[in-house]
Length: 296
Image 1 (cartoon, rainbow, N blue to C red):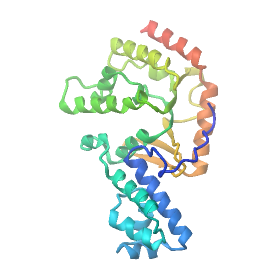
Image 2: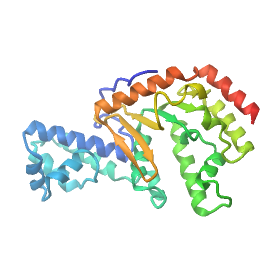
Image 3: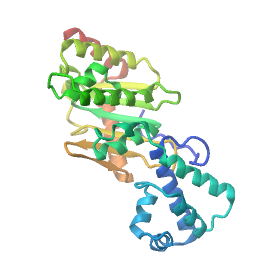
Image 4: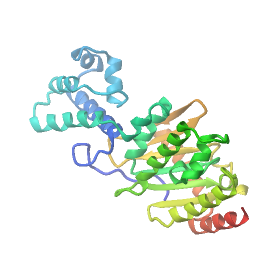
């Protein structure tokens, strides 16, 4: 399970493109390719749609929304007159505007996390290392509620909705075409009694159940081998669509980093490989989880 998987040769015009976030990135990448083929600068493209070079840059990176009129004008400028090709790209505009299910939680989501949820929804493979908590995609409802409560007693509507959001994200693992999830969890996260003993025992039972699914691999990094390959938690998102770069996501207290440069991806891929070597095997990890559960 080491190293990035090869990307498929499919494009956003040929079948599934994932959610609106993926559609936006794919459309931006295709517009960049068409502009470069036409030998047109970003400033020239920006002027043609009554905008700026920086706006074209953001469009091509998929970081802002698209207007159908702007895309139609750019396609004309780039010499794309074939009706089928234009319709295919304009269809991506419509798909990129569709509201993802997570939009109803926008009042709870930090601006830097909303983008992550959209990317996670579109990923074909998710690799994650966790130090403090059980990975969000594998949390039980009670465990997720305890995390959302930050150790404070009492239920509120906000805590309920935060827990609901976590459970909704988890559904990607049970849908047809679910992404492959490979996670390494530090032993300390499994011994930290989030929510109390009963909640933690149920969470460990859930992890054992998750690991019976063929697309989920879980390894536990024991105390004596932790702290060498990585200093903090991170997630690598990989995508089937060649237009979408692999992304490393690193969260901190007041924000997050999205890394997509090849050298950055390679460095974190090597760290993930090292973690897999240092961690217990999948079968031994299951036994360790059972042992920890018996001790709670």
